[in-house]
Length: 197
Image (cartoon, rainbow, N blue to C red; front, side, top):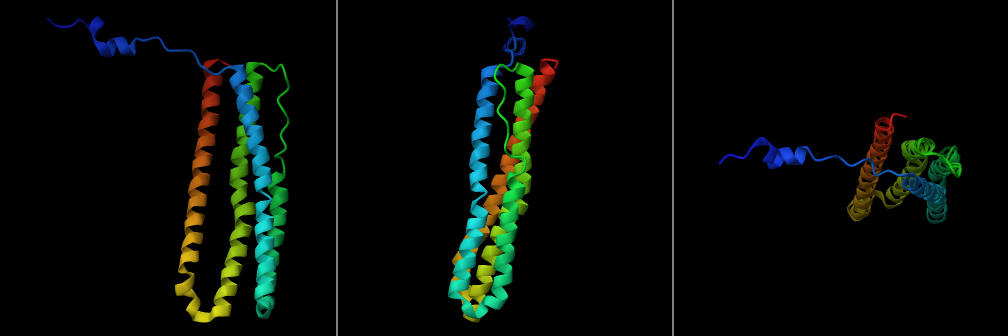
């Protein structure tokens, strides 16, 4: 005996009623609080660029005094670049809290702006945060190469490999974070479209 189309499991599954969006005002407020906490962590993390540049600067000047004429301009550039990066990374990052008693659509818009700030920060951090650190590390490697001559490269391969792996991992993580933030923006847009705002 053949099953009728009404009893077909595929038809039954496809005709299931869909649940309304599970996004509530409380969930939006919780998301905004999480984004604020992430912003604060990122602002503290932005301090690491100048600290790393300063560390390599002091270390390089102390242990390679004969190379100061070559190293000092490069380390100084890395330090100034990282300090300028602090300004450009923190500019516009201080976000306001969502006003209490906001409606669902206002909460969605506020949440979207916070996520867009996160996305913009990730775009700027490569130039203003990561660039100076790479310059400081590169200058340090140059100092090691000049001081040790040709014998450094077999000995420095583990360090150079770690630096290379760190650089690749940094870019992979940043790309994943940017894709995740873009997905969140698209989800908010979808919720907004579904609710006709």
